[in-house]
Length: 180
Picture 1 (cartoon, helix red, strand yellow):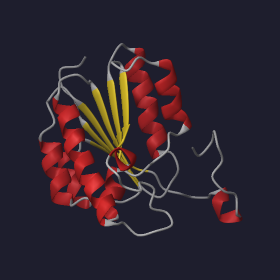
Picture 2: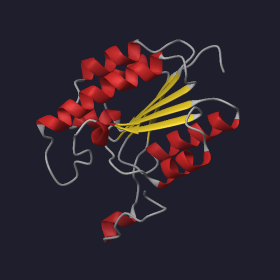
Picture 3: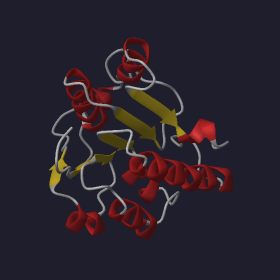
Picture 4: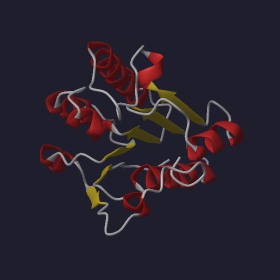
């Protein structure tokens, strides 16, 4: 689709990192590109992913949730990572590399991958090695709250999503169709 792809890194405490990546997926699909989305932490399909699954063909857009694929618990909000979670993330990274290097996709999104590093599910060195395997024509997007300074030399676009104010602090919980 393009001669040269770049590596994007969307991180920070603010809302919208995964949403921005999904918007890029929709834009790529709109121009006839193919998209792969690998989710490292999430175990359920969020609204944007559900939309992509319902409105695209599998060969156009593939979404995989590594936690549930490989026996991990996935969402680690209420408990610490288990050995199964680490194994699921490691197997997910292997799968993510395979898909990125397959030549089938123009855009590859590794959603919450920096959070997987922050939670101890993946080692930063393994993630850097994975990024180095990116084919030149593949656009790669990394997302997650966790800031990993070690990634900066390997990324050409880095955006910090900073929270200024959020209704979560007033007791409003995650809402279907808005936060997920």
